[in-house]
Length: 551
Ligand code: TEU
Ligand code: CA
Image (cartoon, rainbow, N blue to C red; front, side):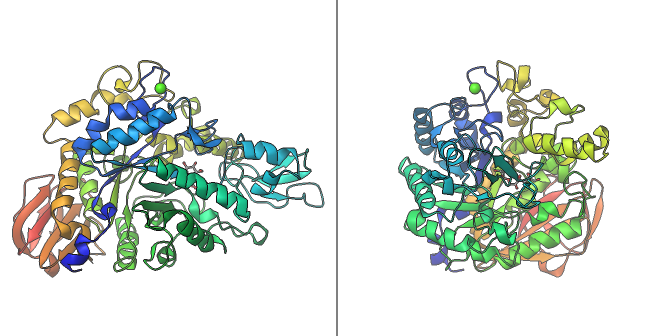
């Protein structure tokens, strides 16, 4: 890439994103629920970290069946989170610190409490009826087909008033919107433009790969209408804006990625893909039965994505979000090597080509929860599947073990600000229990430690701003069959960055591949800085470093 094209590259390529799950971030009024004033109160923490934008999980008005991923008014803020005035203040205060706000766009479905759905379920003649997906019963009166909802049970719910079933791909509280209806699409585009006019910088689009579904053909993910609708949305909303869009897709693969984010497509800027996440799930039992971590397979997935988007499109880089376990628990060691392995994972992810996303608490190495009773869980998905799995004969202990390993509540325990009561998250009773390790793991303690996790993230994010090779350099994987070490080379205009990371909690021998040989400056390390890469080296447990070689 030439210097000119680098200078013209969009801001979101060199920025780092930070995801906030508002309910669990910071509570200012003692109701036990995080709120927008709480986010504003903590903006200095994010400015110090150096992030460029916040992806804010939904703050819209919602009955909170799925913590806001069930919206009852797209143009208002949930009272428990604050007001539109609070939101405007957030945009302004963030902007004053050089931080943009990216909202979550949840338009595959609304809440069953949305005014549209109230009208839709009351009469077939209401214009809003067709905003949702209705089908007649099967000949026996049962649901039109056997499609199961993501959070358990049938995806179809009977409404006697209209004598039809509606589709709720996730749950009955989340009726699917019918994107085939042009008025519905118009409503959504107008709403998006309304938020842009309020000063937001873009959208993360929830399960966007579902909007083009063909229900009767049984096609849900990446259905036949998907890209037509995304191009339509681009024309009506995104064209000409200096915005960023990231579409969430559990179905996207390296084969389909460029259909969303190829430069000539006029759809989205990036996708959140999950191939590397699902790789760690049981092929039959899914997330509830995780399989042992396989570094070679994990690298293969990420390396394939780097290759697929090498010259077109752009990767999003993440291991964590509000639906996933804490990364240090999942891929590192949340015991003796918590700090060191958290830094190692961050180094590997931030040095790849793409835009890194940090999930709240990741920057201090927060860990999974270790719940022992089902009543400690809050997540609609976990509770829905619990009922189903128990009915199927799975023991509660086995299910809870799976939920502790992979469940969504791991990421949703409150942000640990201090070692004090409720980790400084709330003066009241938190809506979900605080992780008991907050005495050791908290922002105050970690930031006070020059060798803390925060310091390492801050350094990575700063490096990104001064090393164009980190953002735009080519990516070349090495030692792909090595089951312990993740290593690669980034290269731009003669600048070569060698990245080496030991995924094992023990000393590991590593034969330095030719491509990485050389000596130079150590840009970042979680151990004693190295200056030379040659021959066979012994990596310390979870050691990771970046060396600028030969330049
Ligand atoms: O998640 C999409 C989704 O499919 C998840 O439910 C995912 O499959 C699951 O966590 C893995 O088992 C998005 C949001 O990120 C999630 O929080 C919402 O619950 C969901 O959509 C519905 O809006
Ligand atoms: Ca609150």
